[in-house]
Length: 475
Ligand code: FAD
Ligand code: NAI
Image (cartoon, rainbow, N blue to C red; front, side, top):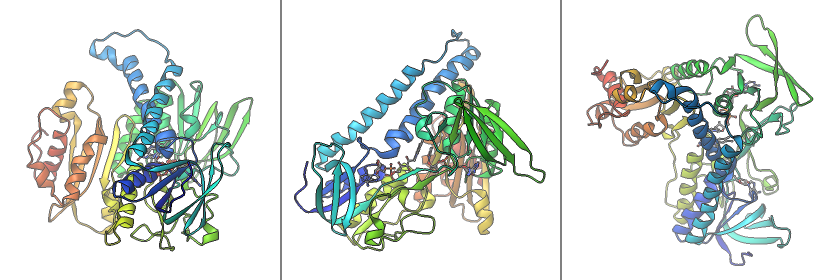
């Protein structure tokens, strides 16, 4: 549909940053249009990221539990091969219902939306080439522009992704058969989550990681525990090591690896699938940023100030294209903040990056918020740590899943909460108790003195807090 009226804001990109910004803008009474070229809204997150990966992680977790854990509880289950077609069908239905849900929300909130590719013609005009060939190209006049075009995977110049043998995360979410041997290049979030999916379905998975630790910026103690737990599940790790070459012949890859130590060793790994998961890069190709002079930082992210404003005052940017963690919930918060600012220029949009939780959805899950011990040491901050293992938590014992621990870090003198790192079942949900505490400037004592229901996994958080300022009861 053609937009003839001047808009208060046009949002380019309909991912978690863009679609949330669009809905919020409409709720605030702004005339808003959201343009996305993918064909369905929701961006990377809903189409080829968070949602399909969590669908696959959940299904394969159930499969793995049924095959390997049920007998432990006295439930004898017949062994069966996974039905990959049905697993993928469930994933697709989760994605479709959520992406369609965004169009419903757009209609409900009176957001104009176009499926097509946007270009910035000038600071007040957007050009749109619609996805449907039958529709005409159009231009939209607008007072403000929000760039929310997200990110794309990184690969090596010498290793083109074919999404069959050499795959990005997108290919790894849709393989047509379970690989026999999978090599994962990069032991970050994507490598560990998608490596886990295919490991559970029967692939032999080897992760090649450049650094000495998996999971990127995780607290070191947690990263070590995660590696221990994944190794127990027979995921293999080659680290620190780098991939020096990959050749593909008859749909079989030979991955050449060199260990990074004093006496480097060379290894060759055979694989029928290689997942490249060495990070993502901001994406703004074809937008025309050079033409209108939007500043780009050295790390290729779009430069914005504290109000998410680029060097051109009426052009804003949010989400994966700007600085900060490339996370859906970070993009969403920025989406809300940016349109609040556009609606009311007195509104401050500062998002405290220290309060953005991060989760890895492996088994056990890993969730963290705030500083790691390493960061605090580096900054010379005096702190105290309270730790509590799930092994001593009654609910964890009752359900028979007691891997991992809770670690709470607070200021040594004041008890102010500085960080929390949880590795264990349900960590992704549990982290928000401490995140809320940090948002409200609580201390570890505030958590330790709060009544928690029994028996719950959350009691481990209370006990970890208590262990920090005094002593835990059940340890
Ligand atoms: P995107 O979601 O990338 O959306 C940008 C949109 O802009 C795209 O749809 C694109 O088509 C569109 N676009 C680009 N250029 C144009 C143009 N010129 N015209 C029109 N449209 C355009 N994050 C989490 O928080 N939790 C998770 O569990 C999680 N899991 C992930 C799993 C995987 C496999 C991957 C790859 C990512 C995952 N992420 C996760 C990261 C998350 O997906 C991103 O941080 C998030 O999607 C960023 O949102 P965004 O709005 O900035 O950009
Ligand atoms: P990442 O940055 O998390 O991890 C990349 C890993 O690859 C790092 O450990 C790095 O040391 C390693 N690496 C880099 N170059 C290498 C090389 N040449 N050889 C071997 N290893 C190398 O990036 P990833 O996993 O690709 O994910 C991209 C982003 O997507 C994440 O940063 C995250 O923001 C987002 N994401 C979030 C998820 C979540 O919140 N649960 C899930 C999946 C993705």
